[in-house]
Image 1 (cartoon, one colour):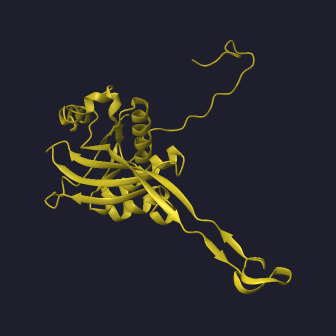
Image 2 (cartoon, helix red, strand yellow):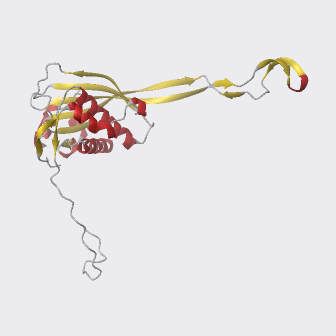
Image 3 (cartoon, rainbow, N blue to C red):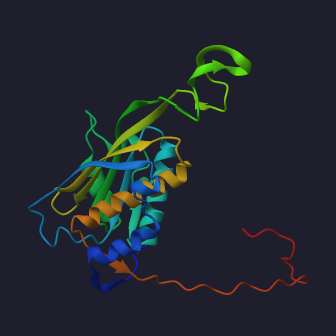
Length: 255
């Protein structure tokens, strides 16, 4: 992914958040992902809080899922004018993202980030799973049961006959994926921001879930005072070529 020409001015975080309204979906909009805790370096300088490019690294076991996640993340970031590059381009093997013991391989990540001209690494990795059991006691409403003569002159007692309604109790399970995301400075190697997230799996299509996850990460970063320059596309849409049935290439597939 080429680095686009950057506009000289910086867009402050408050303005950037307005652009996020079409992507980041809050809890009130049933986003399956929730930010459970976060930390930001209180000593981070203005220069460190200025992000000019991101290397996105998804630390997951499945190599296909890793590439899908990194591509979706970069697409979401690109929609907001943020230059970003998936780590798999420079680090094809997912095992090279970590070192013995499970920590991030910062040497490889920083080397890849410098090749991509990224100022920061955005690393996402799963930390665990859990199951939430939700019990719904159900509901009853209506004029009964009541104490009185039974239907059609039957014996006295609780009478469920006269139009009562009920929803039986139920138990449902939610599978929760817990993850952690770090924003790391390539120049200093310092972790500038980190956030813990919980995501309900299978609540929404996987693509939508990943898009909303990245949107929430980006919103949290901007809320903590980080600045991101606006990039300007350096391409132009070319008009489509007219079809000529007499052409020698007519009827052949483009290569």
